[in-house]
Length: 265
Image (tube, rainbow, N blue to C red; front, side):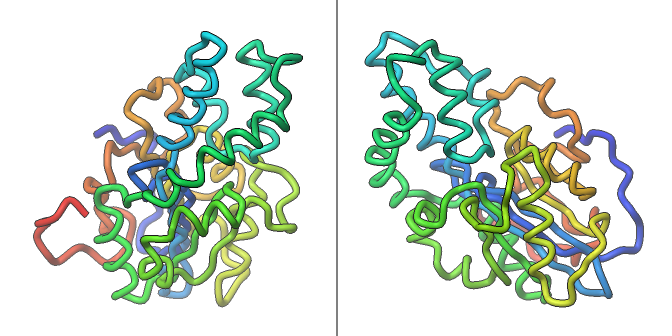
């Protein structure tokens, strides 16, 4: 596990924000952000649903004799649906053959059943329960639309209930998608006791655009990337982990784990 550009503030406590993408192991759904304030820690959490998007987009492209490359996937991760659709048809050479609107309609129909089977990423359940037990406020900040988020979290309502709030990509308060900081700034504003200093927030992200959005918001970022992602896209993250099982809360001024790790969840 590589730690990049670490310059963690000492003796501070954080709020956590999780974005849809680092929690679910079927697809990346989000990011976790922790913000530190007044001796109270908070978090924003997310699921991993990227695999579902990958499966669907591979199926669509196969009809045209094309492959879904990781280089394209890295450009789409974390974007609003309309933005991602435009890039998808342009980058794949389908502009004029498949419109962004047609792509989204077809993708939507194929994603429904996949989202219902989303599982948590290794280490997520343990981390959320641990932070909740210690009174660390958490929230979810995801680029997914609300209807997608509800499908993705169907099997995980208990964990989602531990979140202080959820911000989705179709929230009217979000004017621009990642790498704009809008979604994280809005998520931070919704914590009790806001405004919170952005440099007291820790975000868990899986997407390069999400890392950039968090840094543009002035927050700290732990990245848990897709293992196939080019390492050159890790830049900007304050720490890079291969799994949330590697995350040590005490490294970031959060309450340390006291139990032995006996489960992959």
